Length: 336
Ligand code: ATP
Ligand code: MG
Ligand code: FE
Image 1 (cartoon, helix red, strand yellow):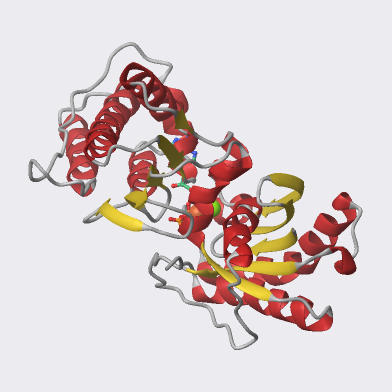
Image 2: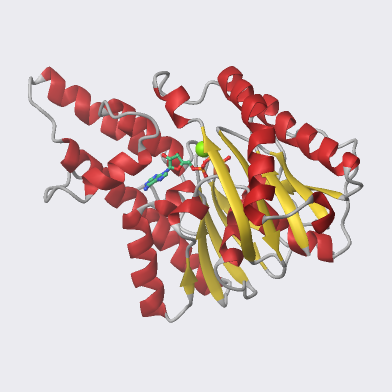
């Protein structure tokens, strides 16, 4: 099947055409990062306005790059939630209009299912699998026994990993989004400031990053009071070591307990070099295949939405034109 997929949940306006859930025919992403930078984060009103301007542009470009017409398509998929409601609605309304005008079925996709299925664009998913989802708004361990089956076995109790990265970056005076810059700084220094690791209860797969974030803020504050300069590279390195160690250890413990055939990483923070290396080394030692998408498919894009929609389409799932944006949508299994 050939699916046109649309994503507009946050600050990327994106459209892609995917064949058989694994082949990217075209993948267009219009990022708004520059427009939000001076505010230090995503401003919902500005995001909506950009989506309105870009949505038809990216859809037309995705079709043009694929050299396809609407009649070449089998379905339209769109991110239904979670995300900013005003942002979601623009992609959803464009998808509905396109589906209606071209008499195509429509499918609503969960954004996090999309992040997970970015991996299907790289190699076939093998079940049961464990997905570590680390993004701007989510930090979750998701167990999948088959396509469309999502069991969240652990999640953050406060900040998401990406959120912690962005907040720490702000403390260091780095521009939004801070994740990539911290990653870079972490690799530039030799020294690391020692920050705590938050493990929670011994058997818990949940995460907590707000204490770590506060530790970084306190460290900076104390150094400022003493009139001492902080080393951004040492703070970045120490912070990243703490995040990566906890994410890796919990993922390993879960992979063992659930006896999975494959471990995958997903979401914007899966673009992190330190995390990618740590997971790759750990699971190579453990003898469990580990995969992570290329950087471009880790952050928001529509190709991943098309990949997630394909098994839904094959299973006969269809939505209709009453679809609405669901800002707080939960990741639920759609398989029986
Ligand atoms: P969600 O997917 O939870 O709705 P989102 O779509 O805003 O949130 P993504 O686009 O998946 O999140 O990821 C963006 C996040 O990834 C930002 O917090 C950004 O700082 C972080 N990020 C991107 N690259 C890196 C990196 N190399 N190291 C650490 N964090 C990174
Ligand atoms: Mg984004
Ligand atoms: Fe995302």
